[in-house]
Image (cartoon, helix red, strand yellow):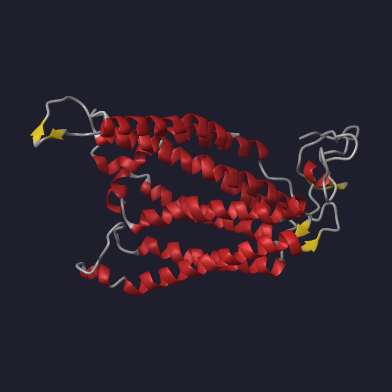
Length: 364
């Protein structure tokens, strides 16, 4: 829901930017052009700035990060609770922090534009909001860690991807604090430091959340298990190789991005060996995803059949359906939800959502 709200409110800005850009290209308007030259003559006009396009683009561009990462957060929270055999810690705080991320996320877009010459006062305002959004993000991180703390951890493939997600989210989040400071960002802007931060959070972490969900719900979707050994290989190879790709980029002494050649810079020529390691690691990451795709499609048709209705011992409602759900999912009456989704390790064991509350039992 949160990601949908972000999308509904943020995408119109990019659409309007695209429409105005077409006006500039086709109708000779000047919404984004800082000069118009026809037949070698500069036309007199007022207004028009490429900075306006940047504002409209980044008004979507930063909420888009949360549109991608918030579903992964939800998946990780749900899957982690199942495989830690513990209720998700601070459930209400998790929801409130996610709402805070959505709201504050609309007031941080210009931290991508600190080097455009914006007013220092305006830069400070956006820096404050950028650093402020780290608070709800930190709440979610501590809640995930506390959910793991003293839990009965089952190190299944979905659980490993959840733990990997938290690790990546911390790594990418810490580097974001540096980029949220205008004085530091001026030095780091358009360097490999930005590449590392962006891809660890929006790329690798978001994919880890997706993979956690795929491995967790695959038995319910297809009635078969994915190959566990290939799943473990997929996790460890991806985790190690992804860190080998992006973590060294934080320490490349301001190595600039988008340069086609670095041979004219003596300092950057010393980075050749490190770049080679990054390139090799990137190919290894790609190979691991080929392995995942093979495992995924092979398991759909040839995977080990599911023999238990609820192989993970989850308490959520979808695991009360038959192994091969028919039309309407449930046979007979649809189960009634009586309790929250995370009654794990209670005095009465793990209790499903469809089990009625006992007299005197406290509801969450």
